[in-house]
Length: 260
Image 1 (cartoon, rainbow, N blue to C red):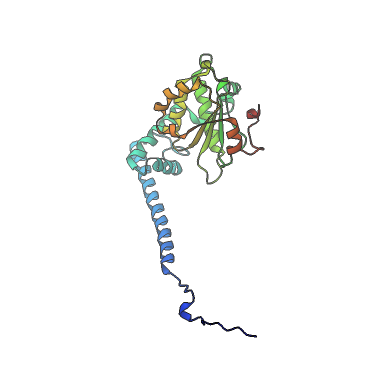
Image 2: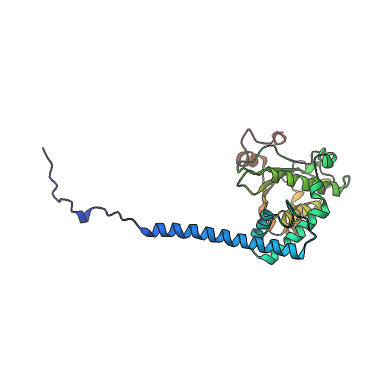
């Protein structure tokens, strides 16, 4: 038996689905905007490149040199696309790389200081696909070790970590293991150097730095360093080893030295 509706549905009472051209327009604008931004970025890169060639012609060329367009774009982003600021910071960074001898650093050149086990690049990425640079503070004795060699190891490991960046990733994770840390391990100069290197020469490359199991004696040291490291202080997180295990690694990728 057929059922009758007491109130037949009228066409006007049915839901109306309409195609909205605005969506297509918005999408088109978004694409055009990205293309425009890309074009503008390209123009700024060329402007920086030309300025460096004209005013800093003695600077080296090639990878990490004055004509390295990827490096130029990175520093432009860091300086909020200010050409003058990018040129100034790039000039300083390229000169520093040349004077410090970054391109001459290799496994053998830092073998002795690396053998202390005070710092190394972890074999695995963290859960966010970031290379991991680990510092074991209890193995650092500034009164007994050459600060220049420590700085060379630091820069070598930063370069090594950056070379492990997966496609599409831009930052690394720093972990400072403070278990067993004592006053004999304190080194304000080196800690300041570490943050200065990231700020001036590897801007925006440090995604976060974890201070793990910080003892009471470390807290006043951090209060002294904090004003010196500028905005990078906001990247610091004090946490436990259990937090590192749960939030930053899988059981398979958790550093073996952290399992002790």
